[in-house]
Amino acid sequence: GQQVMQIPQYQHVQEGEDFTTYCNSSTTLSNIQWYKQRPGGHPVFLIQLVKSGEVKKQKRLTFQFGEAKKNSSLHITATQTTDVGTYFCAPVGASKLTFGTGTRLQVTL
Amino acid sequence: EADIYQTPRYLVIGTGKKITLECSQTMGHDKMYWYQQDPGMELHLIHYSYGVNSTEKGDLSSESTVSRIRTEHFPLTLESARPSHTSQYLCASSGRGISYEQYFGPGTRLTVT
Image 1: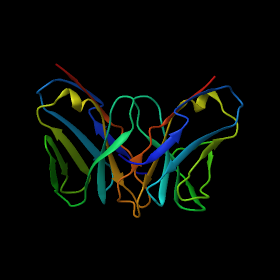
Image 2: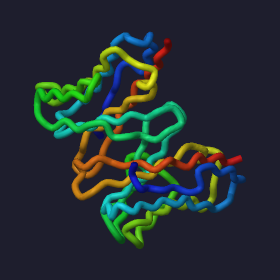
Image 3: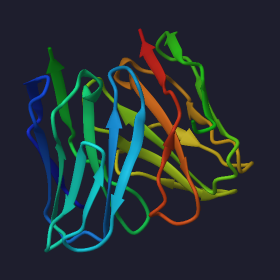
Image 4: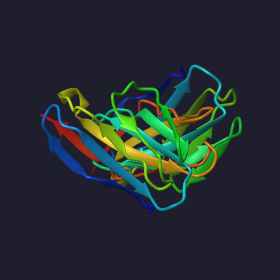
């Protein structure tokens, strides 16, 4: 089955620092979605990437889809405490999503 | 905010008991999903449904069963709970097509003693 690894597993940053999480797949992906889960909460959809090399921005968040469609990244500029949570990539398969291992982000003042 | 509900939110139950976790959505979504998630870990798909009378097993083997008699309702049943079933169970739904975003319910945190 499809395997999706995210790195790092955990990152602790000071508020104002940048943060990046990477999602790597063993197979070529059709689409990929990103979700955020706050501590004690449920996953919330952030974005979907479809095209090779696609870059999308949401305020301080920048999402990229690799040229070969085997990897993706999420970059947060100038983190804030509200960014705390776990970020999951989720490649879209033929009939379902496969969630990545997730990257837990901790932000301190 | 998505209209997808799960009850109960928390459940502590003894080994051997039968339990049903409820999930309902009012968005008219055809696709519904059940995920199992241990604290701080990834989500594992255990069941999904494309519509009424359609159910499929997910990637993670589970002793639970599901039914889809009505579009809005997708309950999950454990016939005989065991401590290994202790986990959080998240229900989700999405519109037509797998590329549609999934909306998650608040989850049921199950503890089997």
